[in-house]
Image (tube, rainbow, N blue to C red; front, side, top):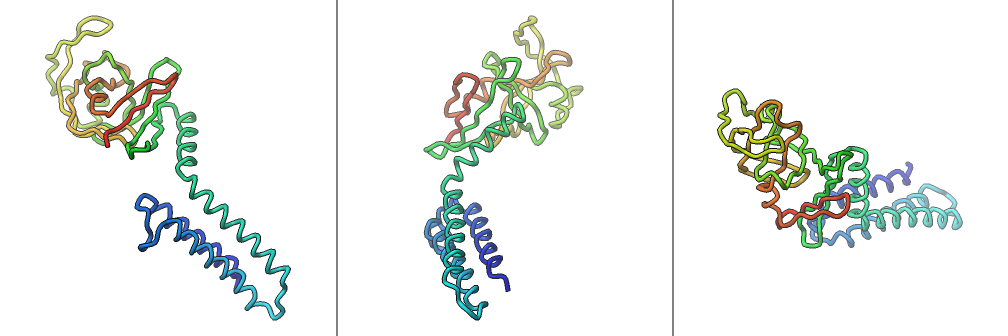
Length: 236
């Protein structure tokens, strides 16, 4: 029997359990740190003890070599777990660079969700999200008082533009246009979720992108611009 593979299996299973329950801080009444130490010791005993049982002649040098290798593996596992938040943030940031508009999510010291948006090539802060389950791209526009959707996005979200009344006048860069007032059940930007929002649907040809207006930003604890990044901080 290959006890090394059993030890690896124990470590992998422990890693999965720790990652899935790290927010709770406990595993079966034991702290995450103690659980990691306990499992590491068990895995080490399985490998060394198993090797001793499987071998008719116990070799001290071989046992020490195996112990050193497994101690290194245990330390690596503990280190990766300790810096899981930093690694997750780094991965999200790399993904955000590779996929323009992808929100970069994290959690601040107060436990609030923080989403960072990168400035795109056109100089806008774009974000990919969903509106009532339909995928959409948004541009943050502090000049727009209300969330405003293109006809295509509205239709994908279950709102038929042909049945809407375009009766509300709004000022745009091209003059006054008339939009249709609607209600949106759920808007998501990464892990940030907004419910029961007032929104407008623009007439055909008036918008190229959906506008994330001030009525959405006002639901946040705060929002700020830092160079080429906009930071959206959700409520607690």
